[in-house]
Image (cartoon, rainbow, N blue to C red; front, side, top):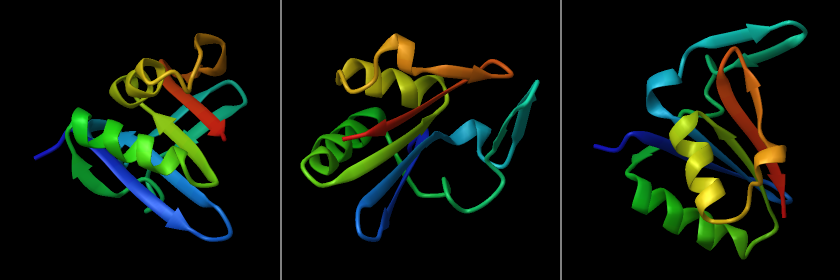
Length: 101
């Protein structure tokens, strides 16, 4: 079983949701910022880090938007060079990044 969830929402452009499995279903709030992971948006296929990295590379070739939530998910995006440190915000200690390619 994997420790990261990945879900591809296909519409006029792909929206790729990547979330650490252990925070799915939770809500985080800090000041005016809120991160709600209780819905189905991030509830995708369980994958390990290598599988997620492969899917991200594949999806980068498409017209994709990425949503990364959680330490492991954001680290993969950083390691692949698609998220810079300044592109990451934290809500109640949970890192979150949006990427439009």
